[in-house]
Length: 266
Image 1 (cartoon, helix red, strand yellow):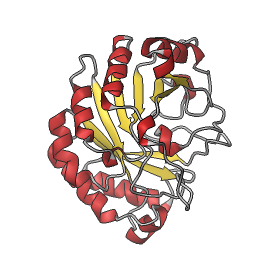
Image 2: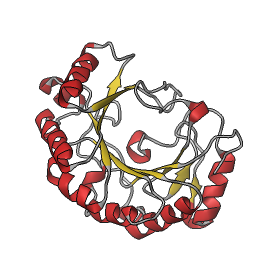
Image 3: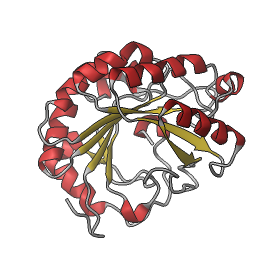
Image 4: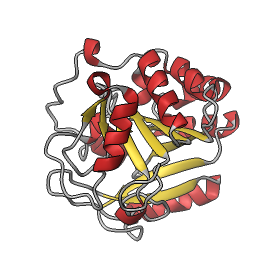
C-alpha cells in the first residue's frame, strides 16, 4: 500500500486495551482516566480478522500495544492468532515490563518475535515516582526473562526531555550496553500541542518516512497519531477503513485533541 505522498504503508500498531498497571506521569493524569467499556473493546477474533485483511493489502509488520497489553486477559491467545497469519514478518509487543517475567516464555511459544520495554531511569526511587508506584526490579527481571525466552532483540524505550545526554538516559544506555539490549531515546511528546521529535535509535517521529496505521481498542483506525482523524472499522468494513485511512494519511502530524497515548499506543 502506498499513500498519496509515496510512502509505503506496511506497519500496523494494535492497541488491545486502554488499561494499565502503571500511571506514568507523561501518559496519565494522577486521578486516572475514564476507561472504555469492556463491551466496546474489539474481540481477539475481530482483531485477527482485521489484521488478516490488512496483511492481504500489504501490512507485514505488526506491533501489539496498550495501555499495557499484558494486563489484557489471555493476551497470548491473540499473539498465537496473529502469528499464524501468513505474511507477517515482524510481530512484536511494547510493554512496561512489569508482568514480562511471568509471560515472556508463553509469549515466545505463542509466536511473538520480540519486545520493546519502557525504561526511563535506572534509579528505583525515581522509577517509582515517574510511574506512580512501579517496581523497577520487576522490569529488570522481565528483561532477563525476555532475553532468556528468545524474544530478540530486546529493545528499550527511554523517554527523554531533550536527548540521550541527560543523566537518566546515560544510565539507561550504559545498562543496555552491558546487558546486550538495544536502546532508543524518545523525545517526550504532547498530543494536544503537537510536540514530537524523531526517535534517536529508531524511526518514529519522522513524518516523511511514516509507514504506520494505528488501531485503537474500540476499533478506530488512525492514519496518524498526531491527527484527530479516525475511521470505524466495524461500521465501514475492514477493507474500506484501511483504504480510507491510506487515502487520508496526512503528510505531517499536527495535533490530536481526541486521543491519548494510553488508548492509541504511542
